[in-house]
Length: 166
Image (cartoon, rainbow, N blue to C red; front, side, top):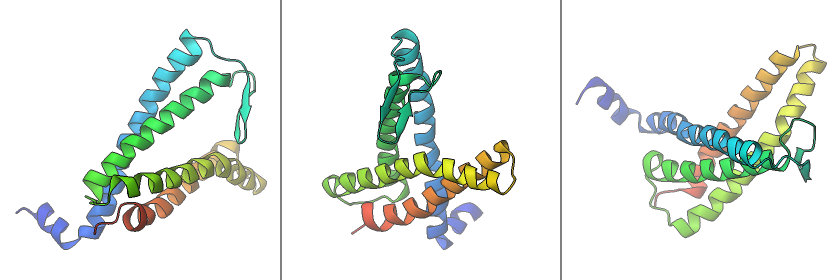
């Protein structure tokens, strides 16, 4: 066994955390591809651009893409989370938790994270701009806060609640 394999054996929890973060990008790539395809289909080809608003989702501003952009977001997020579920369960946590137990818990966690990701950035950006930061820096800080919060919340919940090993 090489140095890397030896390190992995000595630090299995740290390796799992690294794997969690690296393999989460598979769902990110899925989200990007689905967004590009969805935008081309729903907004471009089908022209579904009438203003749309539902609860926290507001696609009513000119240029927002309307209903087509919402459908794109929805399809992309569902596909990304489905990929994330499989990747995390099989490759990161190697969980033997039953699908019927893990899947509904994962859905609850994913919905909470998506809602937080929709609400939090605007508030953090406004707070940062109130402190005198320019819009670009404020948006970057908001993105970092969102990402860190998602990792800090999702990793332990996935490991111990959604996908625990027996």
